Length: 422
View 1: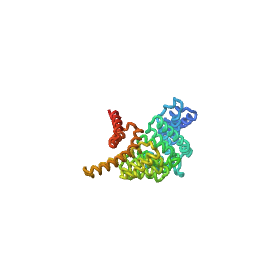
View 2 (view 1 turned 90 degrees about the vertical axis):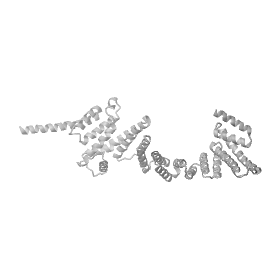
View 3 (view 1 turned 90 degrees about the horizontal axis):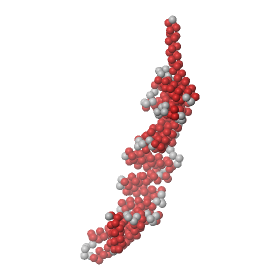
View 4 (view 1 turned 135 degrees about the vertical axis):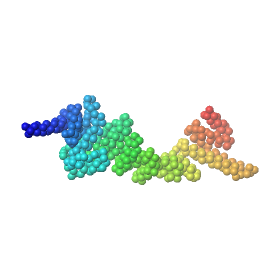
C-alpha cells in the first residue's frame, strides 16, 4: 500500500508539471491557429507556475505571443497588453539566458553590467552550449530582427506624429538592442536615436550616438558625414562644453574639407560672439573659399578688418560685395559709414590740432571732410532706396546734408524722421 501511495504521489507531481508544460504547448497551438487571447492566457499561467517559470521555452513562446499582440489588427487583441514589444524583448533575453546548459550562466542578471557583458560574450561564442539550438536560432535570426523593425516603426511614429521624443528614443534604443543581439549593426537606427535624443534634450545620449555614427563613418556621402560632426558639435554646445564643440567642428573640417561649409560658419559664429576677430577672420576667409559668390561674406570680412583697424582693406571687401550685388544693403551702408566716419574723424582731428585763428588751414580740412561726406552720400541714398524708413540711414543723411549745405534735402529727411518718431 505504501508503494502504491508513493506511486500515486509521484504521478500527481508529474501530472501537475505536465499540465503546466501543457500550457506552453497550448500557447503554441493557439498562436498557430490565431487565437491570440487564449495563447496569452495559457502562457501567462506558465510564467507564474514553479514548474515552468524558469523554462526557456516558456519565455520563448511568451515573447512570440506578446510580439504577435504588438502587431495585432483585430481590436479585441490590441488592448491585451501594454508595451507588448518591450515585454517580448525582455522575454526573449530571458529565454536566451535560461537556454544555457551551464547552471551558472542561467543565473546571469542582465541588469548587471558585468553579467550583461558575459551574456553577450557567451552569445557570440560558437562553443557555448544550449538546451535548444533551434530556439536560439529562432530568437536571434527571426524574432529579434522583426522586433527591431517594430520598434523602429513605433519610434518613427512617436517622432513624426506625436512628437513624443522621449518615447521615440526609447523605441530606437530597444531597436538597437534587438538588432545587436541578432548580431546586426543598423547604423540608420543609431541616427534615428541621435535625432530623438537631441530633440528630447537628452544631450548625453545624443553625444554618444553621434560619436558612434562617426566611428561607423555613417552617411551616404561626405555632406551627410559632415552633418554628423555638426550635430555632435551642437550637442556639446547645448551642454556648455565649447571646447569639445570647437574640437568636433575642427575635426569635421579636417576630415571633409570640401563639404565643411556649415562647420566653418558655426566656428566663425563662435569666434565672432567671443570677440575674437582674428580667429573669426580666419574662418570667414575659409567660408569665402567654399562660397566665393556670397556677397554677405565679404561684408562680414570687411567688418572684421575694421575691428582690426584695417579700414582701407575693409573697403576692398565691401566693394567685392557690391560687385556681386549692387543692392546689398549692408555693403552700401558699410561703405557709406566708412566715408562718413572718415569725414567726422578728419573734422575731429582739425578741431584738436589746428589753432582757432588758422582759418585757412581749417577751411582746407573742412573742404577735405566735405569731399568724404559727398563720397558717402550715394551709398547711403542707395540704402534709403532699399529701406526707406531706416532710422540710422536717415539720421546719418540728415547730418551729411547739413554739413555739405544740401538744406533742401536736409529738411526733407528731417521731416520724414519727425513723422516716423511721432
